[in-house]
Image (cartoon, rainbow, N blue to C red; front, top):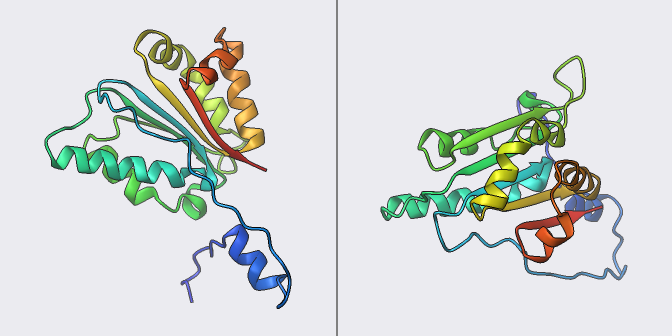
Length: 183
C-alpha cells in the first residue's frame, strides 16, 4: 500500500511483469551515457529534463554535493529545467532537487507542470522564457546544455535553440548541446 500515492512503474520492468513469457528471447543492450560534467567547474551546466529524463541529472546533483563536501564547489552556474505532468503526483525527486538548490549546489530551478494549470506548459516553454540567458551561457561562457527525455521533447528543445538563432548542429558537434533521448 502506497497510502494513495501514485505508483511509479518502469517501462521495462512493467513490460517484463505483464507481457514477457518464459522462453521469449529479448534483445538487451547497454550503452554508456554521453553525459559528462565539464571538468572545469567554472563552466555553466544547463540541464533540461522531462519525466524520467531526470535520472542522469540526479547523478550530477550527487556530484555537485560531493564536490561541495570537498570544498570544490562549482563556480559556474548550474540550472535545471524540469517538467512533468503533476507536481504533487509526478515530481518524485522533489526533495532531492530542492535540497541541492537549498545547499547552493544547484543554482537555479525552473519547473513546468503541464497538467497543473489552465494551459499545458512544457519544459521547452519554460526554456524559451529564459533562452537569451541560456544562449549567452552557451555562446559566451562555454556552457554545456544537457537534454534528457523523450525524443519529441528533445526536438522541441532544438527548435527553441534554433529559433533563438543558435546553430544547433554545430553546438551538438562541439558537444555544447548533449542529448540522451528515447522514443
